[in-house]
Image 1 (spheres, rainbow, N blue to C red):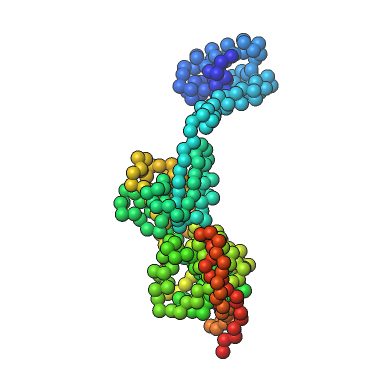
Image 2: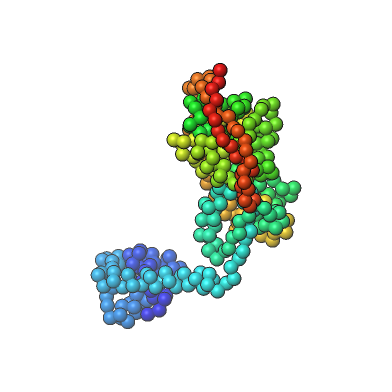
Length: 328
């Protein structure tokens, strides 16, 4: 018995016909028929019951099929196995930039296609030092940039801060803001669209760690700007997401390649990132809208700023004690 006989046997078992099996294998019907007869002689078993022009596996044929299929699967996977064990692992360096929160989903899909790859994630490298960078703007060279998505920036408000209300930009005055670090992609968008307006913003904390920012909001310490697609949805029992009236606050994300990239936009990293972002469903505006609220709030939280100890580069630069203040 050889591999070709096994392959023809499986095709006949699946199609119930030597003619259909031959068509799928792109050989003559007589070639398949002779191969089946030879296999039955070698095993000294009849594998099929002939029912007119149809061939139906008998119990002996079913048992043989259960043994043959794993053999063919192992043979088919052998080249990939050898490649993964003996070829050098390719290393990639990614500047996660504005897409840190979706890196887990990205790498899950990427490793399924490139199981032998090794990936280093960073947010401090120059674009030229990385195989791929995620940015809120394109590079100077069109051939090195790929538009990924546009997402709305929502305002995350702890439920504990009071009744629901529809907010506009002026409503931010007096609310304790938790901001991402200066120079980050999200911070640049906030400064351009919000902080450049004539309002008095009370900055509660600045952090270089997105997870810390999300945790502070969830704990009820302050409000923060929350990208609708690339950040995980908060617990609706603790945090509400709302749109800011009077402003269309969105950001665009781009994947940037280094100038010297022989694969260009067809690189495995670029293809995987495009696949991920194209699958992201748009966020429904009605899902997070905060309406039917009184015009005033009975209390707000006033931040009392105090220094915060730093450790490493991903830390808070400010912390706060919060005290309730009654509005007259």
